[in-house]
Amino acid sequence: GNSVTQMEGPVTLSEEAFLTINCTYTATGYPSLFWYVQYPGEGLQLLLKATKADDKGSNKGFEATYRKETTSFHLEKGSVQVSDSAVYFCALESGGGNKLTFGTGTQLKVEL
Amino acid sequence: DTGVSQDPRHKITKRGQNVTFRCDPISEHNRLYWYRQTLGQGPEFLTYFQNEAQLEKSRLLSDRFSAERPKGSFSTLEIQRTEQGDSAMYLCASSPNGLAGETQYFGPGTRLLVL
Image (cartoon, rainbow over all chains, first blue to last red):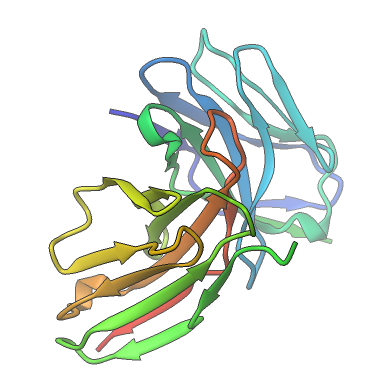
């Protein structure tokens, strides 16, 4: 079946540090890949997505590239801010119904 | 566009009671999903609707759970004879047509606590 594995948190960084959150997946067919973010006290919202191999999704300074050969979709940001503190979920969509399969989430804490 | 709304936001109930949650998707979104999220985990798929038709139910959805979307607009999720293991955040999401790669828009969730 489909599954998503992402690095465990919490990840604690200083402001302006480089961020990488690893995400790998197992899926049949050709899934679409997503990163969702959950800020404290708020609902899940889409951060970025990629729908085919080698596509790069980007938003708010975050990037992730769909790597079919390594079945990965790692999230990166060159310089994090305190306001980026949140829980980040990697997800894939595949198969009938286009339902999402999520990873367990990675909590990011950015300190001054 | 007011986004996906869910009601109530919080529910505390005693074991054995029935509860019902409501989800109002974004207007004109044909696809509606329900997910459940427990502490420290990612959301898990429960069921989805295309318009008023319920097309798939997860094995997570026991016989005590029932969902409806009678007019293809809002949806309800009912849990009968609640158990402590039902305590979780119940999330609703909608998308325009359910096409591959389409963004799902999530509501704020209903947090259920079963005592």
